[in-house]
Length: 448
Image 1 (cartoon, rainbow, N blue to C red):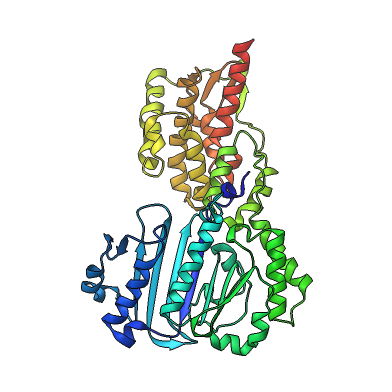
Image 2 (cartoon, one colour; image 1 turned 30 degrees about the vertical axis):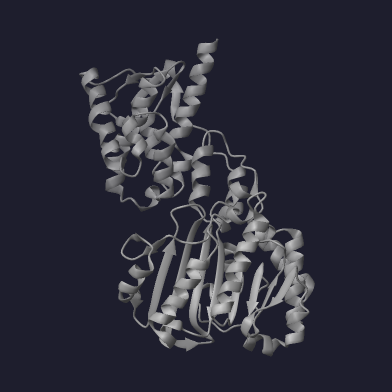
């Protein structure tokens, strides 16, 4: 699996912090200074939308006229975006009071992270991002800055991941790092200037920019982690290289693809669960699901042992199964599972996933479970009949009702009961597993 396929959720983030609020200093002239910066961005990064109550086409006049609408409490926040690739969000936040050299912040997000590792364009992206930082530094003083994988940033120790006004310090070594003059003075300018790096330059106003690697594409590689560790230990001599590198290598495992080797009967259900969770949980989930196999299907009898119908009007009962009960399931879940409306078998794993992912087996009260069992069982049985050619055998006791298919009599209502008896029951006793087993056995009989 390619790392871009594995790492779909991650984004690239760039954050810059300034000790000066241009809106407080110069009012609308300060705002124009910010908009000059926005309009100076490379064409592939320049936004064309501004967010108010909805996305509006950007214009300087619009931002001027609606500036009051960007005001929230003691700060002003303006957000921009693009309708064209690259998928980008660009936000500016202006504070009325400074804390820890932060009066003004800029946050750029590019999604997905694959944008900055696109084959043949990583160097171009690097040039665009460096140009952005340089352009900002020419207009506004800088106290701190970074650019890196968003997830790796949040997995680290930097408090700026949750608090933009946290103390400025050396917490991690990112792909791109900017230290303002106060932090440079604390560390010692010569120490910062001698940081092992792929690139280092002094910015206007005394800030220093440095890179751990030529591009951000391989931030989680062994080479990148070693570069990050060496830089961090250089700037923080109290750290040990071996320990720092071990921590970074452990983080890199999160970004390292694992093959999906899921049980074929529930593979799609497990894959949807992986996709529904964050990247930080992905590896552990895949390891767990690769080892998982649902219990064997037990809700069946040899066809020769299946009881005969014991209801008066067999067809009326069957019509009741496929009409009233099965339609109840569609009515209950069609909004969450649009595939139910098609009547196709592709909806079966979707229903199982919804019941499992939403925790219905655990959180539904007993009385609601008793209402769900007939609906789910009838719906499963209907697919065994109409999709696989089975035959209903209705019984007064619902869980004895069967669908005869080949040499087996399947018990869909009993399976439905088992499927909602606990948190993981919709997976362990999925309708999908029973249906696919019945499908395979049926096909095998026909081939002979």
